Length: 460
Image (tube, rainbow, N blue to C red; front, side, top):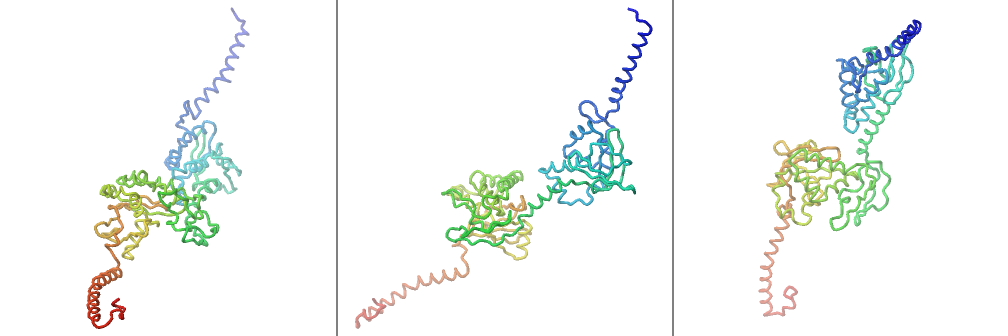
């Protein structure tokens, strides 16, 4: 069918209008868009610009914090303004404890919040810098301030390299320090305060009834995490024949410390360290001491564990382990109710020559002295050297590896000096009495021939 000339001209005009109004803008957006299908980033993106030599450190932090996918999605929806400290300014004025806090595996959320605080979901060039609050990708508010002198600030940091990087999907301003949002700072302060709670000393320790080993009257309230009022010996379970009782301190039931988790961590550390599997097996499988130790640590007590290595444990005989309660007694002799590290014990023996440490196997103590530049425990052939120092130390549990299983010395074999004299005196008395008795008997017989023996009390 033939169209009139006017109709043909109308169709051509309509087609051209559609091309310029619909198709051309769509093609243009595909060409200039910083993202492509599949969520991948264009090489001209502001995120790729972070890999510039001046900002590589914060780019590595973004990757470690698993934020690449989040930022890719954000840059696909918004133009971004990034306030990024240069490499030399990233750790300027940063507290070392805060840095360790950020890189702990359990604080990944805080690290992500801190990094997202540097990203604003809008484009803010330096020449139109507003003085206002802006919500960042972390959800926190950032205060931007500008002055007539041209000194602009982002929160507490100064903008020292304005418009450092310009890209179609964003802009980077170089700042002079790392920004820390209030929420992350408060989280760090809470963690630091909890870590320092163990240093709080108890006030007004209550009286203990020596018959029942219980408090005579209720203890005054003590700060959270303060050391228990009762000695650790009163908190031990009464024995395998009756059900274990909860520790009788003012912290009973409160559990300011997750002792079971700490015991699990130190046993896993022993296994991963290598060479201490037998000791860990006794704690977990042969006895219930791992549970007992976890309860004590939860109550606020501290322990130093002298752990014999596998070579030393292999020398134990079946007879030594088969007696009822023998494994527990062996382990108790290796538990010191103090927190000691290799350094503290070595300094003690260097200064005092010989140090006696209490153990959980009453009334026996472990004698430590310096030998060959290390710490030596015990006496004679049964002594042990501190073989692997500080296998595990967390402020409440300290594990020191030794090369021999320790046994308490037999009291009959090692009497005290005074006791030896008394023993010798007893022996002399026992030997000389029969001699004096025979002489007295002969005298009484002689006297009996002349006088009545009953008149002498010694001859009755």
